[in-house]
Image 1 (cartoon, helix red, strand yellow):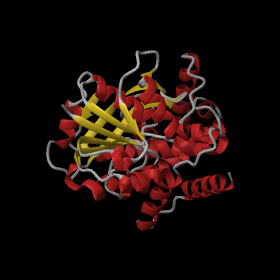
Image 2 (cartoon, rainbow, N blue to C red; image 1 turned 135 degrees about the vertical axis):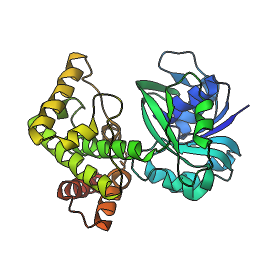
Image 3 (cartoon, rainbow, N blue to C red; image 1 turned 45 degrees about the horizontal axis):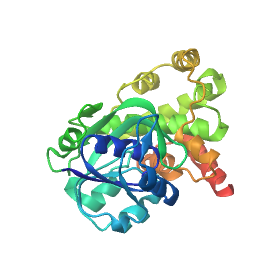
Image 4 (cartoon, one colour; image 1 turned 180 degrees about the vertical axis):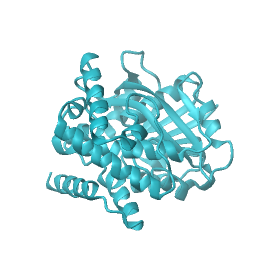
Length: 315
């Protein structure tokens, strides 16, 4: 039986944990006390499905060795969770945001760490209950330091799910990272629900500036962005004129509105709603640091990073 440990089992970690359990794995969730207590008492419920029986704990030191480790916490909890975990893993992946999201796993697990881009959405409701809010794919890829075939082994443990194994995961990692910085930057400062940032010309403008600055950083790193899944064609947007990008982004907002997707609250807004910190360094600060290393000017990204850091410290 495949053994799986999920460090930081909030919304997304719970969704993946349930998937692994449904595939026959022995799963341990490391979660906050209220969530862990509810899961142990009544099982883990995803949407309106029957509860899944899973072991949940609050102390990562109580989780043993595993075949697959999933890091699903916010990035600022990495030190506590990875430092507290005493076990080993044959394969490790992260569903966190940020272009450097695989680096903590590489430092901790070496050749077992792979790169991952999760386009799955999840929302945590009451303890013991998570919602699978967006059914996108999960993209996995061995890094240059990864033992060959590790990403494929993770994919094989989730049969029937939308998983893709990429020979080069960097373009997908950077494409999601740039998109996350653009979307979360605008949402974090305006606190608008998702579709609204594409309907307003002012927010479309800032989104475009953030995306173009992110694309320039990726290019300096030798990575070309890609047009992946869904309506957000980040490569196309960053290669178009401002007017063309405005038309494309407006169409995204109008399509979401027509489909009734008018209450989508991205992760940074969920954190703000709950009075919790958000991932300024992982999503924004790392990009600014990489830009600085290439002597790139990224004024919009730098300003958004400073404002979000101030907002978080003031809260």
